[in-house]
Image (tube, rainbow, N blue to C red):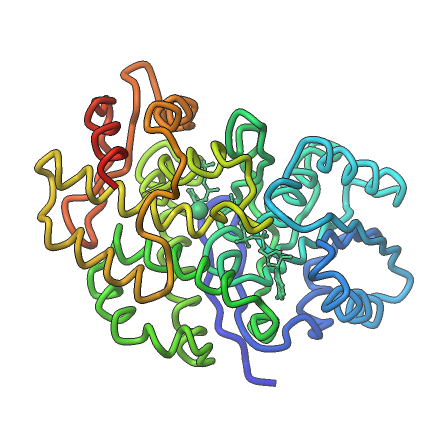
Length: 368
Ligand SMILES: NC(=O)c1ccc[n+]([C@@H]2O[C@H](COP(=O)([O-])OP(=O)(O)OC[C@H]3O[C@@H](n4cnc5c(N)ncnc54)[C@H](O)[C@@H]3O)[C@@H](O)[C@H]2O)c1
Ligand SMILES: O=C(O)C(=O)C[C@@H](O)[C@H](O)[C@H](O)COP(=O)(O)O
Ligand SMILES: [Zn+2]
């Protein structure tokens, strides 16, 4: 077994992100995260048949006598609901999970967010270990402790900050990830370059083909570098009181699109999260240009890179600017001054902008 890469997340609730092939079989690494004798593996109906038995077997081998159950969600963003969250809590009750139990979130960001929220609430908080199986979850959602479910009114409106005890990213699971989901993950990878580091954007431009071809070395580097950017900011600002909000670049627009489309991304007729963030980043860059904050050339560069990665860069048909702006008002960054958006001053330099004029936002939405 190749030795895993690791990224440490500092702060009050420090933990390690381990990245490498076949880590789901590593009983020692998995069992190191266990405190009690109950474990619930939460997954979805695509991922559970592929990988859950490996995790359960590795845990049993490392800790005989462990009581393990599985809770399996139907796949898709439209399942990240309060109702499924309630079912997950029922599964913990059936297991008899005590306060030293561990939830293993095996899947993409939908599983990670919902299972993490259940762990945050069960008996006021038990351990969750994130076992991400999508690129998006490896580079973003498994790290940082944001957990949530969606409401029909908006994305992630009910949730809690609940950092994982560990993140174990088995990169071999990416071999079965559908092409579209790989591209969606690359949108959040591009986000780190856009907000923090122009040199990372240069690297992504050089590695675009290798990443799309799932070159192991390119993917491992993209994951480790992304985790390092995210680890740095969440350790400084775990509860998003300051610059962590930059991780939301493209998200106020993106979440409005996902909500307006009824979270149909994984059903095939709408945009999934990564795709919506791709369009959202283009809109944020265009608004920055329109407001005179950033040069046009950087907006063009971002669009070209996202398009090369096979991501959408224009608004889907049928979405009304007024309806999207109404959704944006329920964004969690909005405040008494109105919309607070993450814009940029150019590639690699995000900026938090309060009190953004809604007419300017509608004009950009109408133009893209
Ligand atoms: N908490 C955070 O900080 C954070 C960050 C980014 C995104 N998110 C959330 O993450 C969610 C999106 O996550 P996602 O893009 O992983 O989507 P997802 O969880 O819906 O997974 C995408 C699809 O891939 C399938 N899949 C997962 N792993 C697979 C594998 N290895 N092989 C085959 N199929 C596999 C899933 O079953 C699903 O159909 C959104 O709800 C978003 O809001 C949260
Ligand atoms: O970790 C963060 O902070 C992020 O904003 C990461 C985002 O990619 C992610 O989609 C997050 O779930 C959005 O958070 P929200 O607070 O806007 O719901
Ligand atoms: Zn996101």
